[in-house]
Length: 60
Image (cartoon, rainbow, N blue to C red; front, side):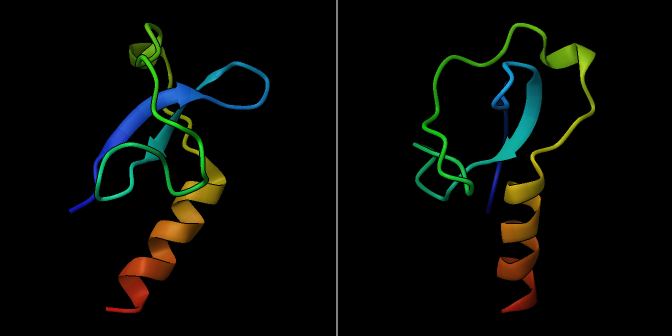
């Protein structure tokens, strides 16, 4: 099972990432840090994480 985590994109804006199963990093390679305090203000998702997640789901 994968979980979502709100971190930052390369510009520092909050985005939702998909965590790896061990929950230490994201599918796009970002290390999990403190969750963004602005997580309630965004509905943006990390494109790279979402693309990787779709590939994982499709391979099942």
